[in-house]
Length: 323
Ligand code: ACO
Image (tube, rainbow, N blue to C red; front, side, top):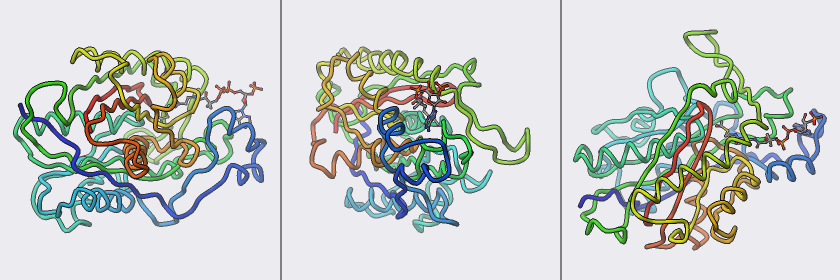
């Protein structure tokens, strides 16, 4: 049985770190409110002129180095992003050029905060179908570019960054003990469009627009939908919450992360949390957290990892993999 195994992981965060206290200067907000309502303490913002593809390429290099692979080993690049450098071409083709990769393919996936889950699921399908042996899967965002800096209910929540994994085809035994992606579950429901969207685009306003969010209704959807997609992904392969070593969740809000872990019957000791340092980096948050979890020596080879995410669409999903 063919499996898509994580061979390496890496990330990149822009140099500029912005603490909550910065927002106190321009908005009616406080470090205390942001910390207690969201768990966020600081976030990184890209420098002027630093684009999503710059962040993505740096994360990709780190993942290749961690895998001990040269770019020649890569058959394709999939980038999950909602904040591309340009309307087209894809960020993936820009990363391809940046890495000096002249063969293979690259394309972007757009499922907002669930983007990395969607990208991993696509990459897994390509590997299982024999279309590629080795893929770079990247989540990269510059959400600072779509913030309304006068809206305290959104602009304090997001950050910039990128994370990447190298996925490689390996022959497994076909059991749940195999390393690699074991299961996935994808969902979307366009009826929730107004809960989270960007109020601009090529075919409507002709400009990029700003992020708009109904945080509280979304919050109430999140825990329920994340728990059910996580349980679906586990059930498909006959596993339950008790089999999970690590939850590596999308990092939007510490209270959503805690609520989901509790509903799954897992302790917070089994959750990789980076929201305090990164804020919500949308499609980049899961690969960033994976990279941090591995670098800290917490996630180890053979561990069962559950990742879940929800965001604009609404779009949500989960992936189960053995590290
Ligand atoms: N500082 C101070 N007060 C604030 C701020 C702020 N930055 N922002 C909002 N408030 C106020 C509100 O105006 C409101 O005041 P009111 O009671 O006088 O009306 C009060 O704080 C409470 O606001 P709520 O929105 O009800 O607070 P809540 O507990 O829901 O927390 C939050 C808000 C953090 C946004 C939360 O709802 C959340 O995390 N939602 C989900 C976000 C999410 O998961 N997004 C999905 C992924 S993102 C993506 O896909 C791109």
